[in-house]
Image (cartoon, rainbow, N blue to C red; front, side, top):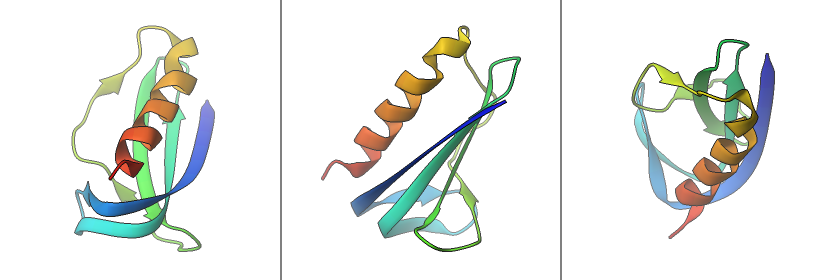
Length: 80
C-alpha cells in the first residue's frame, strides 16, 4: 500500500461526498493498494477529519501511475 499527500490552496473549492464544497488550505491524500484500488480523500490542513472525493471504484491498471494521478489531481484541484 502506498500513500501520497499534497497540500494546496483551493480558491474555488473542492466537492466532497460528506459535507459538500470545502475551500482554503487543503491536503489531498491518495492511497493505492497492491491491486491498484485508489482511495481519494481531502481535509483542511491540520484537521483530523478526512472527507472523500465523489465517485467510487477508482482503479489503476499500472501501480506506477499512482504518482502521476496524484500530482494531476492536486494540480487540477488547485487551479483557479
